[in-house]
Image (cartoon, rainbow, N blue to C red; front, side, top):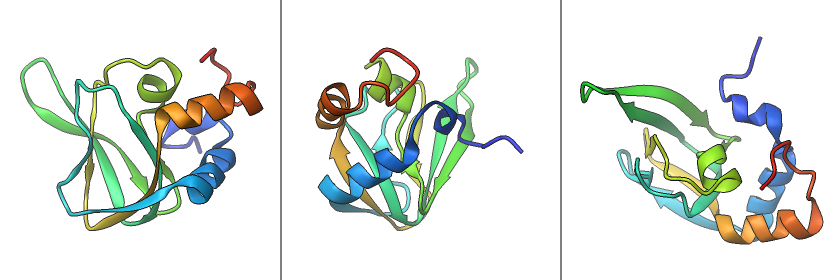
Length: 125
């Protein structure tokens, strides 16, 4: 069965998790709090230690839909837009319940990857 969060297929998610656990600061999110707003370039990536987040998008008719989830033990980030290409996100990431995340700044993670593990992802970053 294919993974629901298909960005995991292009990256070494254990390295991302380990980096967040070693260098991250724990942040608590209340239900409904935003990790990322649609239209912003993501500044953080994280490893969810408790709770879950939902990814939402607004279609051309203004209807908001849930387009993905990340759960405890997974990384929370709009990976392609925030980390790989530094573009504005086309999704919002919202806490679905009380949640805790080991967060690191995207720029620090990118610097680490470029210096130490340039083959981390299959895309050029």
